[in-house]
Image (cartoon, rainbow, N blue to C red; front, side, top):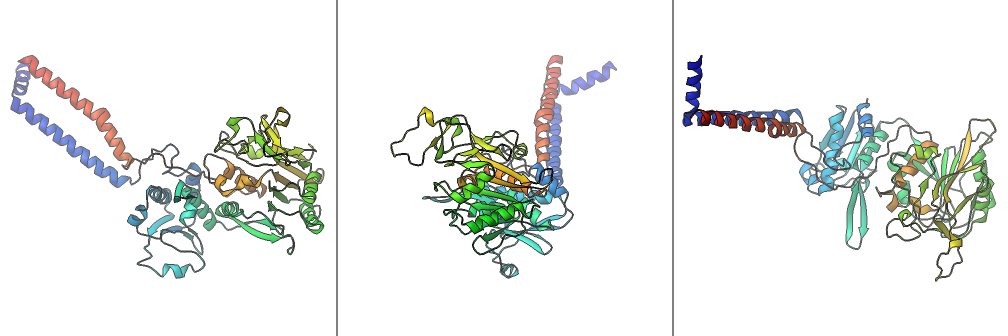
Length: 482
């Protein structure tokens, strides 16, 4: 036995033999590595998302919804893949998100169609604005066309337009919900009294989340049976007939079950008839504009009227907010006051450091201690119904319409979009909607396969150290026996 061992050790004393062994070992390892990478790439075609907010991945809510699909859904990207990706990093992110849906369900298919090669696509969707890079989500006879404005938050400035964040998952999942749903939720936008013209962003948010917004004029139309209506910052006061329409709508022949949301126009000092209706529901709209002395409760440039709200923890609308550390902004707000606590409650409020600048303040006005009146309600909800009855009607008052300005709704550093969408979902008793925050791209994804990453990790964490250890051991034995 000792002779055999001596022969083996003797071979290792031969430098040519050692070199051949090491060459064969490294060759085998290299071949195994390449085979492993090839097999891994065949088994998995995804990418690793290393961004902090998982901008290149689907959220858990979207994944659950996709897993539950029982209908075939087709995603059609109106461009070649290469040209779509060539538009920039946000289009690359959108493309990854689009293909994630097909990864989680065999009910989903993705294809790329060039409008240059297939101009007849436009004629198939005559009512839609079909353009290059549009995305069509289709299920049976229902479809939704998404543009760049639907999948990205775009900011306009003197330098031009630029993408500031992606809402690709939000738009795509919403489109999936829409095309696969057999029902439609309708809400009313009440008009007729010079309402603010900035409602487009808010209406777009509702429509993106599969609400059908019906426009009703209080001057010419009768109220319908939609359970939720909203008044978007009128500049003129209502007449008696319109006030009675609202009252009858809310009481609903004593069947109740109706909901009205009133967004205040802060530029108006007083609308007596509307404010009297609100007061009957236990809320008073006071004079002036709210300012904030606590700098941590301001946003953007830190101006004292760029105010942030605090959540009322007892509110059911707060319980469903995923991240309560993200605030709701409500700049240029009128101060609200609860005058009947049995009817009304606070949903959002300004801090203890909030105060009120009177409407008749002079240009050189500066706040004083007596102006500090916080905490001040900035969003309230009143409830009315038969005593002991299950069906109730609600009147929600929002201190300023700027809370649903399109710029604030698109900010992923604010909860405005999530909060007001949750309000509508709750009031309509809706269960089939998913709220997903916009995502900014901070760090690009690592463009390798997950299994490739595992193989690389094994190579560097296990195989390479073992090879080095074995090599060192062999060299040590050879030199020891010399």
